[in-house]
Image (cartoon, rainbow, N blue to C red; front, top):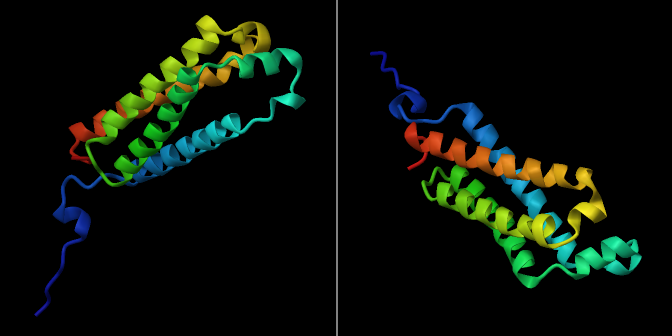
Amino acid sequence: MNVQVPELASLNSNAPPKLFWVISAASLLWNLAGSAAFLAQITLDTSALPNAERAFYESVPAWATIAFGVAVFAGVLGSVGLLLRRHWAIMMFIVSLLGIVVQNSHAIFIGDGFEVFGAAGFVLPFFILIAALALIGYARRAARRAWIG
């Protein structure tokens, strides 16, 4: 008697593809890098910076720093949520996006970010915004395909 056991993936028609795991893991690494950047900024010794940069970092209000922390740590939670296949990952990525917008509003509209760092200083914040929007879109797609629930 030859009994064949179906593969686990065939038992669960909602099993995500391998690319889902790759994107989820990459998003976790990306957000952990953001967390490291946050920790570096809040422990930054501004005394070694040029005057304009020192003035910029020393003028960052607490609400912008808090928004930075919310952005990166909500992003980490969203990535963990994807890896755990949880629907709340979407909300965490949305919270992260809101943190990004609030944080960058200081540098763009209130602080002298453009004068201090020039146009090149806005490439990374723009890329971060695009990445956050992409993660929200991907998490929503994963929910529609029942990869997360």
